[in-house]
Length: 373
Image (cartoon, rainbow, N blue to C red; front, side, top):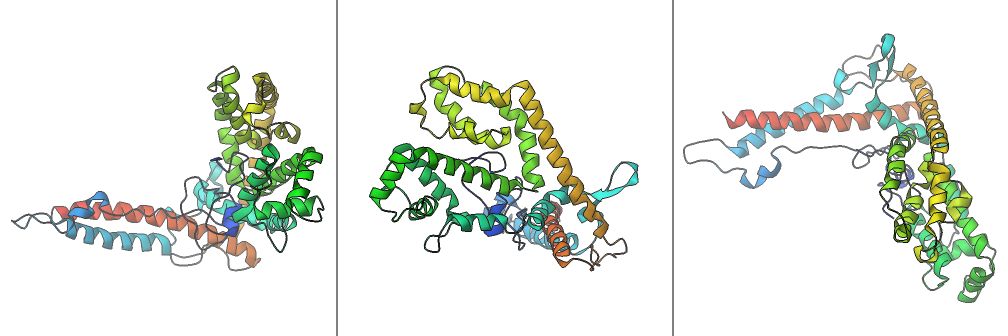
């Protein structure tokens, strides 16, 4: 569906491993995941020289500027600055900043990287267990196949075509509705006799997963809060009349979770656009959640969730070792190992991002300077 996983109600997931994928690409401005299974804040490695690589090594006949030499100097500077940024305790990579009144708090940059680690600490394996409850040993449900499985069941709801169901989707339906077999006859009978129940099952599953994936996640909650005004304004651009039905149907599906749409109204959206004849039905659903009063209430609720998570995360600032030297450990090497690991993983991820950034700047600067040597 192409939905921002921090905002919408899509079935798909992102990331490089199981736990990172369960965080649904929280870091909107991050890259590949680091070694922490819960931290999907990435590195942002800049390369010196950019598009000049094709001209590297080319020199003028009179011993003029050498791009190859510039790149060599730039690469050395990048490595030095990157290492210096990553392996030391300095203001550029400190997780601490000073708030009003001189109070020491975690910086916004660190909080973004700590978000996934904190969510993992609080949520444990709840989402994994939920997936296990959906599937079978023969056809387990995982982060990788969950999206395709749910989309297959939704297509089945709309078309009744059993042949297009995936193996996992068939097994999920067999388990949930206690079918003797997941064959064509049994599934066709399920569609004709219990379609409303299948829709309810899909909706409940969808909402449960979205709740689990966003639980205790600062990045996801902040993303939803920050996008709320745009969601409301975006509705106005979809037009009016019957021609707007496909776009409005997709829009409501995409932003249902951000708007705080209830299950009953979401279930009404499990149809093809051709099956909706009156656009007023969609307009009414949006008004229910997008008008001034409910919109204000939703924003207040999200602000409260963000504030609650932030306060809980900031309590861990007490774990910072104020006596740590230039090469010492940033966090106190005592207490709960799980917490210490989470904090160190978050700091490592933040350092990798900043090390790449400063290394890129240093490389570019050294390359420019060496050009004139």
